Length: 68
Image 1 (cartoon, helix red, strand yellow):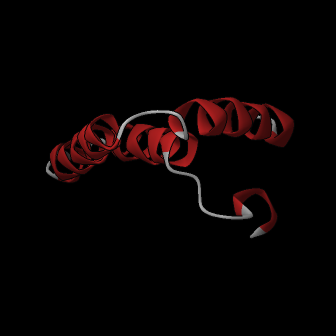
Image 2 (cartoon, helix red, strand yellow; image 1 turned 30 degrees about the vertical axis):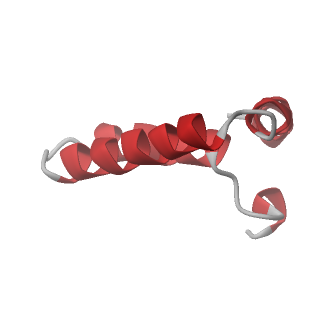
């Protein structure tokens, strides 16, 4: 996926998530943690890639696009 598209998605979701209530943000964290545990329990590496992608979009690290 192109970096510019990931950057755009991060910016859009970041702006939306900043306005969400703490209850919703906690639910997103719980969902990501549950998905990670389930992905880790399968031999399919695509499961882990999908969870990593969702985590990058929904919970980006500061300067995530520049840490390569």
